[in-house]
Image (tube, rainbow, N blue to C red):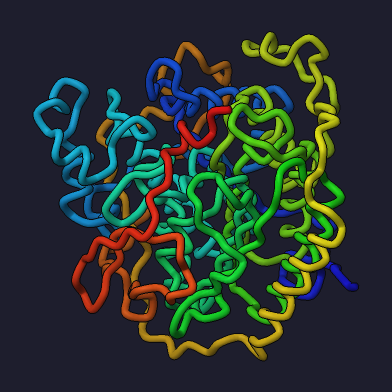
Length: 479
């Protein structure tokens, strides 16, 4: 079976050619704190950045400090009242808003913490800014490791995610590209993104995830989209212990077929690192190289590529993974020995970039893998050609407000890059963005989805749909 990755040529040249890469980073992102004992730690983004700096990768790409997304930017997808709630709630006032906390699912998994709304603005602004850079055509790959929060819904938080930066970035990419492909290699199903685009043929969502008694409970192989979106949702359900070889035996042929039949103008790859071996909340057995092979393969198609973060709760391995994958994006091989830097102690006792997977049992039998691959490829074969879209005048790029104080790099005591100047991400175009456009308006999913989706828009009216209630991510992941 041909799983080669060079079917879509571009001006950037062959796979061996260097890519024009830009990278978004906010030095303050590592200061946000979900709370004591919570597995989601934004500090991992700072650790990743420190590795990039000390491996010399920042010098090989254009680095931008993102402008925060404004409230109206977030409302391109999210409900006004939900965004307003996120803006106003604080740890001090949350007890006065118990009903709203329950309504918007801001609870144990998604707690209220200091600077919550600023955190959302930061990672969403970075993802949308990265999408704008790709739309301008001056970069082949854009990276935002603080993004990839794929569980957030239109009207509620979910699975450590408050604002769905991925949906916002895809909406931005759709201004230029007729079709956008979303691929998710987080161990958890990319439910929030799939739900947002479940009834459109302009966005195809492909998720490789653990399925069964596992958060969020969605992502059955039979969930394939609805209406115009039928066959444009692809779910690859996996079992515990999947290793590099087994994973790639599905990933490459499925993605190759997707690229052949869908022919996207841009690709968004969510690189959740909780699918790595030894993750605090995960149960897969991928190595850093195996995980990074997905990035290498997507890169080989020479299509504009947005790389985002996601899950990942053994933070030393998250930093290893995303540093390695930045090197993959740049076409740079990194030495295995981690350079000494302020977080060097995290990587002991071996201080290597790569870690050895465990000897855990791979519950994905050859027959199971063959059956999944055959099922998915058969479904994709029903798409004879890429859908055509009648384009109207392209909406302007998203514009971000300038900050009066534009110091390139604040005196961040935790950053070692005194000699590195960040570029502020500026856009001069007039802001004029519609809400979720008619082509991607969300409607009720098919009856085939027995797992339940929340807060869907049916004929312009928000309705609450819940077929089965699943345990929160923290509870579901506790052994």
